[in-house]
Length: 91
Image 1 (cartoon, rainbow, N blue to C red):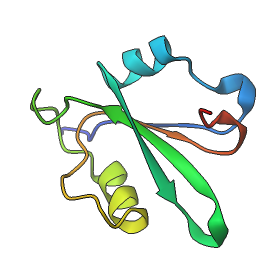
Image 2: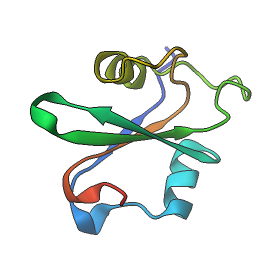
Image 3: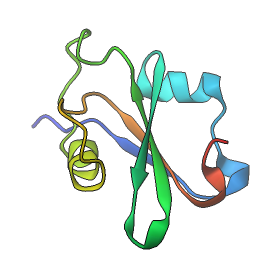
Image 4: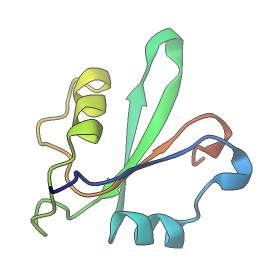
């Protein structure tokens, strides 16, 4: 059985990944996607910037998040993704 790419989640400031760690988790250059949640809050999704070019595996969880909370997204999310919320968000 093949499993979908992982979605890593960070909430606490002390758990916030630095750029190098984020690149290791997503497998390359990082693209930051800001998602507007309900009640005016936001979360950030970090994905591989070249995931489609690298033919990375479709990520249904990350794609669903983006489709629900970002109306301008047209392509699916592929590869591992990182969700940053609360104090773990990048400035």
